[in-house]
Structure formats: structure tokens, C-alpha cells
Image 1 (cartoon, helix red, strand yellow):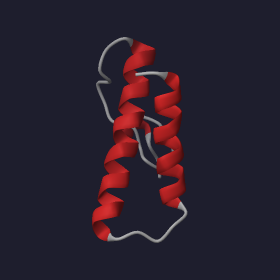
Image 2 (cartoon, rainbow, N blue to C red):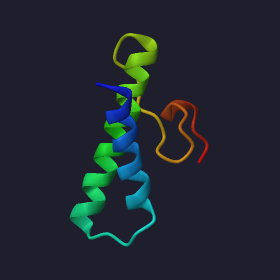
Image 3 (cartoon, rainbow, N blue to C red):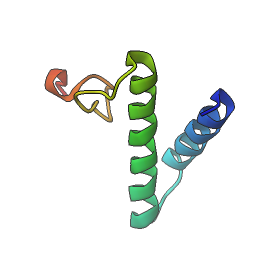
Image 4 (cartoon, rainbow, N blue to C red):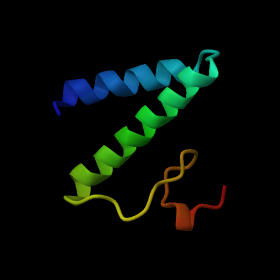
Length: 66
């Protein structure tokens, strides 16, 4: 994907975090955010991430202390 497309999707996610959302909209926002985080990990590492990252602090779940 192009950098501009990724930035646009992140902008969409951040804008949604500041508004009240319905349950369906919130689930969509969380899935898009998770997919963007996974995509960035895969681009950096060159392979799919072995472990998901925490949605709060951004570290791998095994290292999370939230």
C-alpha cells in the first residue's frame, strides 16, 4: 500500500477514537486499527508478526503489563 493510503487510514482510526460510536462502528474501528498495526509490523520485519501487539501500549502481548 502507498504511504498516503496508510496515513489516511490512521487518520480515520484516530478520528473515530475521539467520537462516540455505535457497537458496530467500534468493532470496525478496532479491527482496522489492529490490521494497520499488523501491516506496519510485517513491513518492518518482512514477515507476519508472531505475536499480536497490545492495543493500549503497543508492545507484544507477552510483554504487556497493562
